[in-house]
Image (cartoon, rainbow, N blue to C red; front, side, top):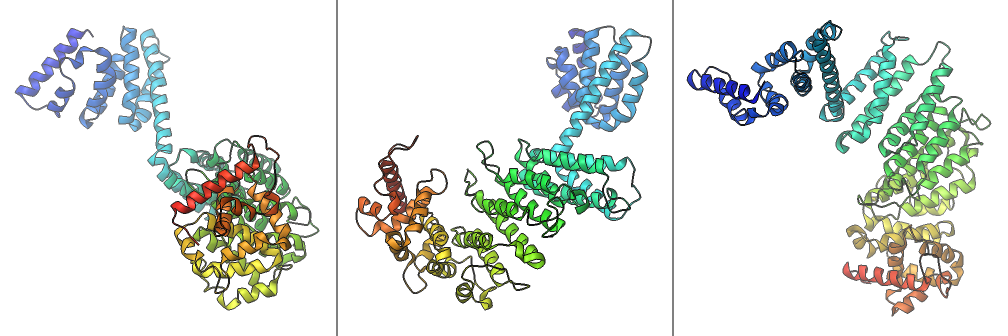
Length: 577
């Protein structure tokens, strides 16, 4: 139609609206489709038509007119504009498009009239694409955030209800939906992400337990290979949330699916927990991988002389503990704060769960070195400056110390620990309160096995003060020497040379915790005089080094710069001895 025809139709519509007033939404339509707006043919088809179709009275007639009168128009430009208009109108009536319009267009696409075939094929393409986009938007937006957990819950409940779908193709559809939900986690808002993930994982566990096991209690080898291999491969996805989702899904798999694949799964989860430059900020995926490792161990059970492909045994227990203990050393920070704390918290929980599992089955798998490392790292975390993480570490520490069904073997200085932390106070000790926690923790400085770890934890804690640790610093001595006095003595004592050298390694570490640690040392040395005097109180391994480090320059200058920075931060915080 020409510009003149469009304008004439607009004038006729305006006349009827003005004289009769019977056209629904007449004034609103005239405002949008005025004389000048309808002068542009593209604007009429692609913009104004969508606005008018927004009124229910015009939606279906508008679509029918385009299908019946415009997609077979002699002018190819009109045909193409009509099909694009149908694309834009699809969100207004998706059900009508899918169930009425598409079935009507399909016969026309193979008809005898060339113009009609051309228009019908283009219309089918545009409507199909629009329906696909609409489905993706519903899955990824608010609709998906609501519907994905709901459908996963439906799958879970139907599986738990033992519905007779074994061997039915619908099971493949359910599996696809669960996998798609896990792959769509990066597109879900952070508020709904955890709910979607948990719903998908729960559905996965129920589906496998009901439909993937045969009469012999085993999995189909081909299905097992496909499922486990696919899930392990997703652990190296470049999206953190996808790693996180599939880690938790592996942790939820039943024993018959993990049997014979335990090492493959543990190796895959271990890789997720490792920090590399490309994924240093992937703290959530590292956390979920550590949680999954403990779940897998609990699922597979313990058998000391068993196969490492089917049980937690002497062949893989060291590897499992090494992975979990490595998680306790994660001090990653980013714009969200101490995100490494999420990893440390999960690592501590998993250490406790795996240890109690071993103790109750084959305690001899826990050797003295593993137990010492675990308890020492827990002691360090019990001196954490963040209340939540300190409380969790303290709770795990006391749970392992006082567990007696049977007791955890090889705990260093057990008798002294039980005097410092009596069983009667296991539930009442408030680890969230620095004034209660630090007086107990500082007493561990007198136990050689714990000295280095507790000193390191307290140094970092005092060097990175929060409001509660500022208050707690005043009473960390528990009625005896203050923590700062203890640290001065320890840092200056030649008898503690081993501890000093190990602390030096932490001071010289360019990434881990150098500034809070230097600030903690600054507190210990501040009362001694000048900056140079303070540096002399640092561990001997830090003194007198003149060689240069690649990328850092003189170590003395590096230390002095950080010493000044730590002192300035302490002064700005109003701290004093």
